[in-house]
Length: 355
Image (cartoon, rainbow, N blue to C red; front, side, top):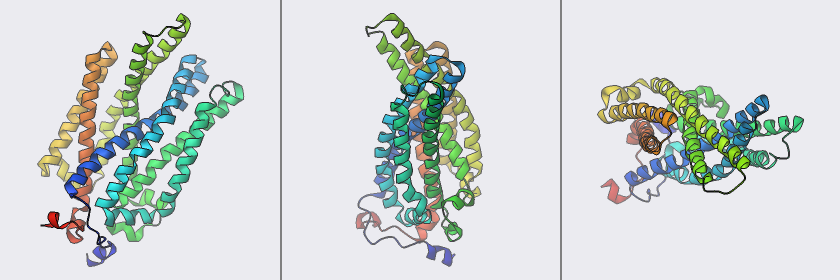
């Protein structure tokens, strides 16, 4: 045990510039804002490629036009996702300095490559968007799909770097055996469970977003003056977007219940049992989140059948509550994993807090 704690570096002497509890609230809120846009960016880029391929196979314009809409969303939202990622990154480095920095150093090459990967992905996705009309036939169309798929695959790869980073910081006892990022993909527990949990969340959030956005465009269309044929074409695209969005949201959310359970049982047993009855708060949060997830699916199904504002508002409200609960539980999970190490290696807090 003494050898283990000697691996964990001492905290820097500069005190944390504020109340830790306040920073913990900020990290949860800022992370949720960031991950919301990350989810939609990843989901929309992937769905754009699938919808374009579907349009090529079925030779129907509606799929291609909807894919173009998705490509436009991706090119805008990815920038917002990156900007909103600055706050949680700074906060986690301040609150968990002794754990975040060593875990980052252990995958240093992969971490530094993030800049190259993201810049490359962004450039590719810009090309995917702006070359859409110029590469809409024959072999050029196939090449265009390949461009979109390569950009989407890069975005799908990026979360693995962050997941290895944040899981590694929870296991200081495993640092000595770490051999870099690719080794970490199969060395640390929970990596792939977390990854698939993230991917399903991305499609679920994207589905809700697509319904909301296309519903907004459909209502706006009624007030616009244009040729009937063009208006009808846009109307068909918006209806397709709403329908596909709800289908994706419902099915991926249901799958989340399965993969969420798989993730839960992958935790260390003492941690898992906190969510299974040993800790009243965590058990309550888990049960309420599951119940509200099922309620949200019900509202989404009713929205699919009736398409009325009431079910849209109920779906969005329930979704935001579930999202908040998930963010809270994620923070509590990290705290419970690190608490034994923090007790032995206390943070450098300011005098007011330490008293």
